[in-house]
Amino acid sequence: MSSFEADVRQILDEKFIEKAKNLKKSGHIFNPIFYLFFTRLVELSAIFRNIVLPNRYEIEELFAMRKDFLQIDYRTLVEIIRRAWVYERSRGAEFSFSKNADDMLYLLYRMGRIQKELDAVILKHAEWKKEKLVELYVNLLRILLEIDDEINKSIGLF
Image (tube, rainbow, N blue to C red; front, top):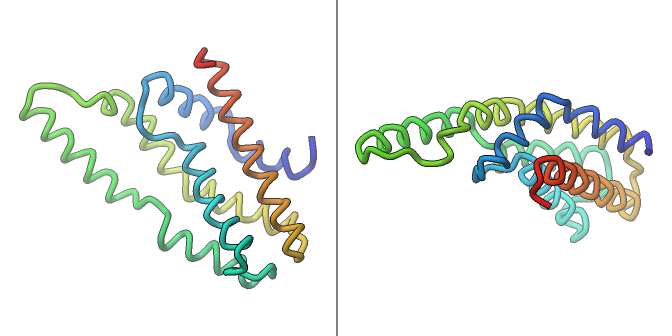
């Protein structure tokens, strides 16, 4: 295991993985690993298409842009859950996602910190050449896919 992979895996601690498993077991719509994968895939696309140049300033700006545009707002989500709860009560039946709302809220609450820690790991291991930065992001995406696969296997999905 490379130093980069060890750093990434350390960020996604046991409690995070356990909560992610709980959501998957329940068939919950939110998958935190996919969310991380998707946000980093968007960043990789920006680098790959030369929208962002391979230097520290541009990458930090990319991170700031992600926070502004792709970061899930915790307050918005709590409001959506509250409204769903009111709707559930009015129709007399629960949405399946309500059964694990506490796990989802925990994961979403941690997501900002996790993204910030992943940003730091990327900056720590970055080499400021496009090919090297693309390779680093591809490795990050591979690691996230492996973690998701490990979660799926541990709960008997595959």
